[in-house]
Image (tube, rainbow, N blue to C red; front, side, top):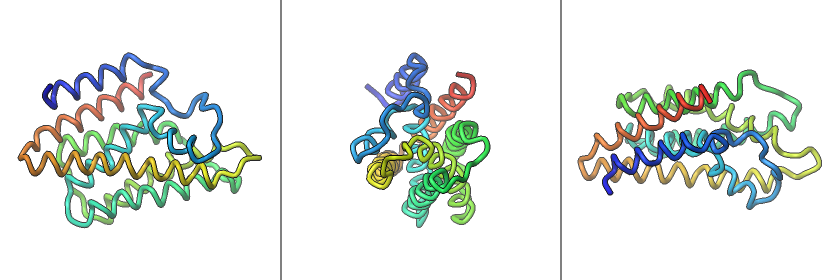
Amino acid sequence: MNQSTLMRLSVMAGLLLPSFAYAHTGVGEANGFLHGLMHPASGLDHVCAMLAVGLWAAQMGGRSVWAVPLTFVGVMALGGALPMLGMSLPFVEQGIVLSVLLLGVLIAASVRFPLWLSSGMVGLFALWHGHAHGVEIPEQASGMVYAIGFMLATALLHVVGIAFGLGMQRLARERAIHFAGAGIALCGVYLAVA
């Protein structure tokens, strides 16, 4: 099975599973390391955004390969702490959808920004993602163990995106990266209308 077929199947699977689209509804228990570790894989928005951060970082190359994903994970932790401090952010779900759509477009178009701009953009997206998960942690629960699991899973998804991006570059398959970005952008469109 080639890369293009695999990408199409992934997008179609996401389109056929509307309950998979948003990881922020009906999450159930949101405490404990395993819940945090499993949560990023529970929604199309998370999987697409986290893979996209890694893929875009790999596509930009240089220091971006590590700085952009680390920015995301660090700022996501800050975003997760905001609700626990009684602070809220506007347009969280819209921001999450925007992150998927925009990151997909940036990857598909091979857009390369300076490190400060790409890290800043990813940091803004991370605030929304982190905030959404901070809201889900029950008040009586200790969110620290959950957050460690969530941050580890997020970093692992970034690594998968980086590995795919670097692997495709080594194989001179830049086009596969563009198709992956287009697939992520299409998922963003779906999330916007779902």
